[in-house]
Image (cartoon, rainbow, N blue to C red; front, side):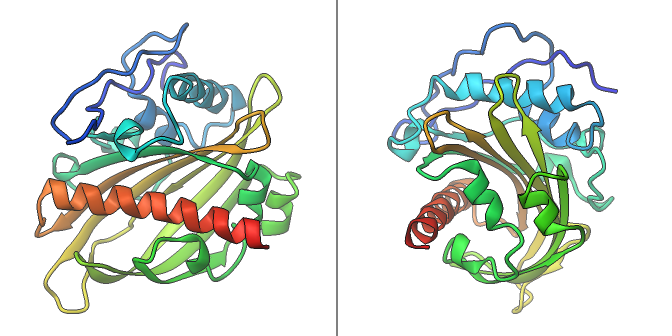
Length: 270
């Protein structure tokens, strides 16, 4: 079992105008060790002891306190980080042929004006396209466990299976992805919502020109204490052939932001 002591998210390149300019984010206090925080949160997702996830989310919350979450993407986006290996999968059934060294790692943080519980209320909806970027031509969700129980917070975990048709300048691929959610209560009583998603096999595009070898995600929503939510997503991706890290990174990061904007717009309107 992982030690419950961990470091904060490793200092990643902070994009300040272009991906090559490096600025280090300061670590939060009281955490030591050698675990990358993204890997910790992904791998500890199934931990029975709630303290394991609680302390990971609190470390992330402390890290993001130093970031301008409503500013330009260049100040809240990180390209790079530790690769997700088999040791970090936890209970995720990522296919055996996935090659960690081929992963492009993109992380974006932001701010929602809506509380975490409102975000949770959207999870059981079968058609997820209103809450996604325009690259999601279709996003159909099937619940494996009880959605009402999860939204009502009388159970702390929810399992779903999703069929996604992703179409943009890079891909035209339909794939299946498990996506699991869990509640995490912080020591100060605030709620957080953590999700992880992955591929159980590679998926090839409609024209046969490219393949999603990996599309693995960690998502965190944290009550900001002011009626809104801190939003945070890391993607470990591997598209073959690759169009290049710059194009893939910008497309991924912009898609994350667009999904958050669409989610907030839908919640505001409804």
